[in-house]
Amino acid sequence: MIRVEDVSFSYPGKPVFSHLDLTLPDAGIAALMAPSGYGKTTLLRLLAGLEAPASGRITGLENRKTAFLFQEDRLLPWLTAEKNIALVSDAERAAYWLEKMEIDGGQYPRAMSGGMQRRVALARAMAFGGDVLLLDEPFKGLDEALRDRIAGRIRDVFPLTVLAVHDPEEAALMGAQILRLDAGRNG
Image (cartoon, rainbow, N blue to C red):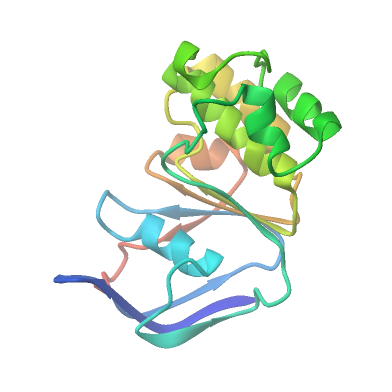
């Protein structure tokens, strides 16, 4: 099990968590749900090791390779979609995930819609591979039909997927166990 034990975390002048306890499964799909401002993105960053708790600890992720889809797409504008993905993988995996995301790999980010850029960022996280996939608002900018197709293609690829979403429908679409961060607010 992955355990978040007595974790406290603050940004300068802004407390986020105070003594947060949470258990995530070792495998499957878990959805972190709460309104904006309740720390979903921060918790993903803590799980990825991009932030460190002020106190408490997170265990169960040691020696696991983690892929992260950030809330921002973070694409390099001077590279094509394919080359953005190939930065973390190889050409074959890049082509595979571009096809799954319904994207032409020869396009540059500036020529893409926001939803297309989101799918390239998602393809990059998928191509990176690993044991744990962290997704921050993965379906942002996608229409319902596209979201449904993409969800089916990313579900169950990684041993563990943790996503941060606002919409219970998106959690259900992924078949996720819902973990509420706003139940008994800790921050």
